[in-house]
Length: 119
Image 1: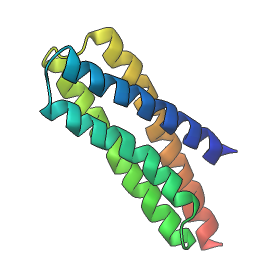
Image 2 (image 1 turned 120 degrees about the vertical axis):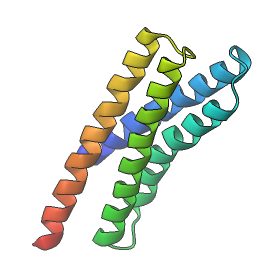
Image 3 (image 1 turned 90 degrees about the horizontal axis):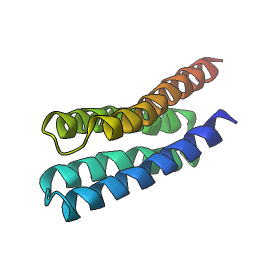
Image 4 (image 1 turned 90 degrees about the vertical axis):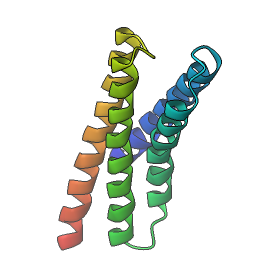
């Protein structure tokens, strides 16, 4: 059940990131940062999906760990966009809440997978 929640939330977050990237490019004429956040913000969900069919428990953990790194990088780009006034505080906070939730779910999923891998 936890993995499907992670899958759903990361997909919904990726959609928000795509829309953010579109906004940055069309309204703000910002192309470099928009591509960075688009890459990292959608990569997390893609890696979570990829992990579903990992070749082994170790591969599953590895892919989720990379997704964790991508989600963490996305948090960084969100902060940069806020601190350079490309996005407003309210949008930043909303996206940050979603990003942190995905980070927490990934950490919990990795811990659970590591524990079950030891057994």
